[in-house]
Image (cartoon, rainbow, N blue to C red; front, side, top):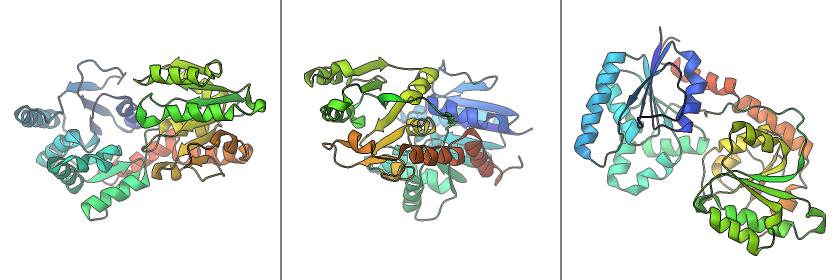
Length: 348
């Protein structure tokens, strides 16, 4: 009987990861930071611990509690999410219990956390120097980890995606944005670019659908009215999986132009659904998108990039994107990737 202890904040990312790996183990216990989880972890036993280090005495007391959970459960392997206080605790426990541990980096934990100060940098360094193996969803994150460690780490590129391929979706004149309405995601730039796009009389029937929530909603609605394009924009609010998938399948174009990002699951979903992706020029995006071949990479946000994206051979782009998804972002591809990591340390 093979057992794994999963450790991470209660989030959709942890849940998606659980879905990918749950069938690889006979027994799973999960440590999260919320009394009532929003997700269905099946029959897995749930433990709750506060991962915050704001109260240093409570923090080290909680490490002892986590160690007790691990000693009682006796997992064959531990897998922790994010190289932050969560994985600091997990790595300390793994070392004490002599259990192999895998840490999944999310991006900002490696790219931003070490810049926050001496304590944070030391914490990340401790994690990457003491965990057995790592996963990351982008090569540039893995390279940054090697740079911090000043060594070549055992890092596997994998994500939590279980992307479905949409066969022959019927497309409409729709542009789709579903990133959070925060300044980071530059939804205002999307709206402004859409206004430029609509100046062409032949594009008057196009619609921009903006899904999601966030503090910028009122500002974005006001912007669409000031540009006299509110009738062509639909703000849907938060959508469930099936609603989201339905719009992907209708949209000709998917747009995601944040200031910074790791591998976006939304981008992968759009690729699987046959959208032409428009993305910002970021390392993670360039691992998936070749400019003007299977998508459009934006550098000039004042340009009519929606019009430019329509010049791409859509049939060729869809073929390339769906093949990428099958090979790198399907349920099986990711399950196999995580399995390959575990096999290095346990018989499974």
